[in-house]
Image (cartoon, rainbow, N blue to C red):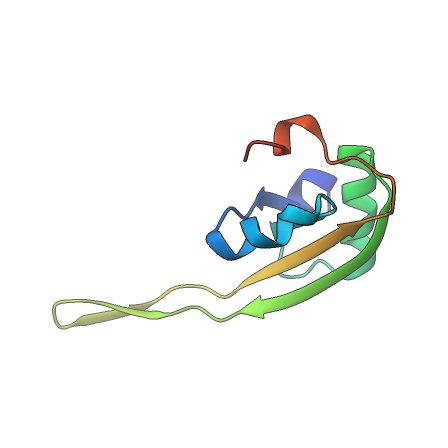
Length: 96
């Protein structure tokens, strides 16, 4: 799996914005089959920042309806990455 396949996109929500206020925590939408070691390696290679911890969780997809037809969104994985003390958040993620 390529590094860009592991990290899909940063998650920007109200909850993740509160977590980011410490300046060391970033939350990403990652590939479902990526483990913590893959995520840590991809962040260190792509962002050039050292990672202290990685916490992951599976978000289960919701059932959505359109009239009488029901469909299901797919499950996805979220990774909360905490950078080491003294590491700086990348510039392009500062305002996001």
